[in-house]
Image 1 (cartoon, rainbow, N blue to C red):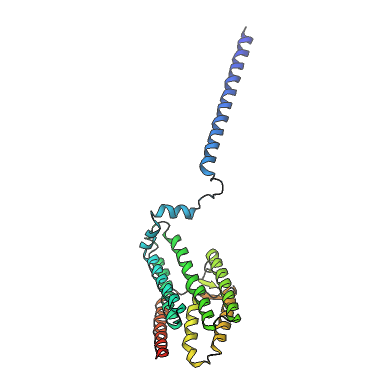
Image 2 (tube, rainbow, N blue to C red):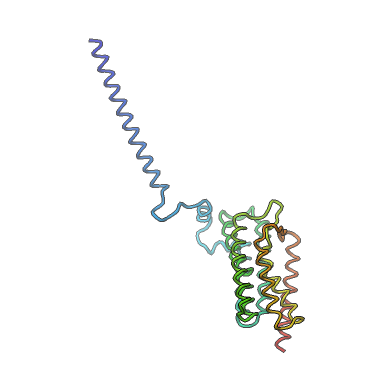
Length: 268
């Protein structure tokens, strides 16, 4: 009698145990299914990254990122960049480069302001500013000089080669910098594309001293060499920071004034 009762109790316990196991398995499957629904993106879409999440959480509208001081300065730099391209394409190359010099020194000020206001910037603003500034670098440091090279040379094969190399090297360099950044001692690997517009300004300032038929060749060769130096990782160039920012600003303003004067003298 006792043995039969004991067997019945064991059987009931085993059945209850199995029922608990099945219920646990079902709950686990439900939890896994729920997790998959939450974390598995729809077909063709990737999971949001930490950066995209922070950007989405940091603003209600794209335009609000310009309320940040550093990003507002970058936006002003874009304004001068478009003016510079407009002037150059309309045959006023010296005036175009003069305007682009303002884009160049503003490009240094936005970084300076960003570093000094990092403690008060809203979430996601820094990530936006980094991309926003990168496009400006490509515009004033690569696309604009390439267009001016072609305009000065009036579409020669050498100018096409120089422009192709400059755009390719500039894109490679900016992509590399986006992922690697500065060295531990705050230096660039390779010559930054921000040196292109100042070189263009210097060449134009020296133009009156050079033969007209030789000047386009000099410009094209100079930028072919510079394109190669953009991707030369053996070169270390210190970043323009601190007291170097106002020095670069003074150079840009003085250079732009000199280019305006040359342009005006050429019209007389």
